Image (tube, rainbow, N blue to C red; front, top):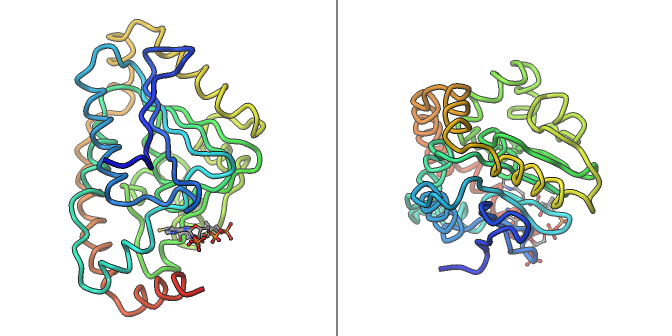
Amino acid sequence: MTDHILIERSETAPHVQIIRFNRPEKKNAITRAMYQAMTDALKAADQTPDVRVNVFLGTEGCFSAGNDMADFLAFAMGGSMGREVVDFLIALASARKPVVSGVDGLAIGIGTTIHLHCDLTVASDRSLFKTPFVDLALVPEAASSLIAPRIMGHQRAFALLALGEGFSATQAKEAGLIWQVTTPEAVESETLALAAKLAAKPPEALRIARDLMRGSPEAVLDRIQQEAGHFAAQLKSAEARAAFEAFMKR
Ligand code: COA
């Protein structure tokens, strides 16, 4: 159990489950316990007819700064990564209910790649999407090496995932990573309004439409595993360890 992930129901739309990052003092960096809590929530939603839509939200000015660097460093020093990250990615890629996200501010690493699995994302105009994987001597994850080139073309995906360029909300929208740009004040209400609209649709028709559009998840699940193998190997590299140590000591 962790209170760094809050599972709530929308006050205005009771069929909407909100999964909220709640670790603002660490920029909503995601620990193993947080991944586990999110996996449990997605799986519970799949089993609960009363939940029709999942929503990811962060806190004011920060969606998430990505994986917890202390966990990366612990693994680089010989500890176990555990199953939590990959289990979460699998649960996300195979979620049966629509997933909507709302971003205000920082969206780093998995804080960006999570949206490749979302059906609709709203972001504030001060948001920043960035994946410094290669700078940290790591590789893209969450099947981003497969999905990002598909939706935005090779060069833009390469700029995001390999060059480590930050995308503004407008660039993210142009790239097809997100659906809508709004003000920081309106992010939550507009995200929840979209989720409520979806939750009011006939669930079976929505499910079939979504499944048809997403296609079989097999290639995505395979890529998650393939990337995870490279990611784990790179985490143990001297360059990655140096990058994590530099972050922790700064
Ligand atoms: N893991 C663990 N802790 C993190 C973190 C992460 N990914 N990102 C931020 N934090 C912590 C900082 O260590 C700091 O904690 P402290 O106050 O106890 O020292 C706190 O969150 C605030 O971060 P800070 O760096 O002071 O805020 P900032 O506004 O100057 O910068 C970021 C924010 C996100 C740009 C910067 O923290 C950063 O680059 N984080 C790492 C992002 C990253 O590379 N993620 C992994 C991607 S694969």
